[in-house]
Image (cartoon, rainbow, N blue to C red; front, side, top):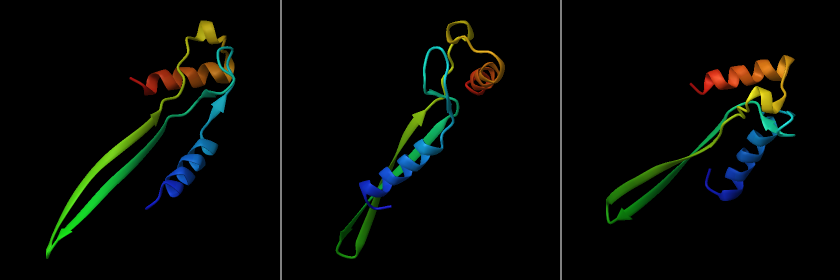
Length: 89
């Protein structure tokens, strides 16, 4: 990728495909983790010598892990919350 627009397209794609569900605490509670890694590369040429500098940016959206009593979860939402909390440990 070489433009902000391309990065935004991937972020939008990921956002549309993440799992969300309603709890008593949040209408759009994340039910899945999302991680985007963006690598930035700068290549500099000086005569016949080239140097390369790179770095990574990680954008992380962790799934919601509300307390079950406050979120009033049961059934599928309770099972999701339990799995989310386990995945964070």
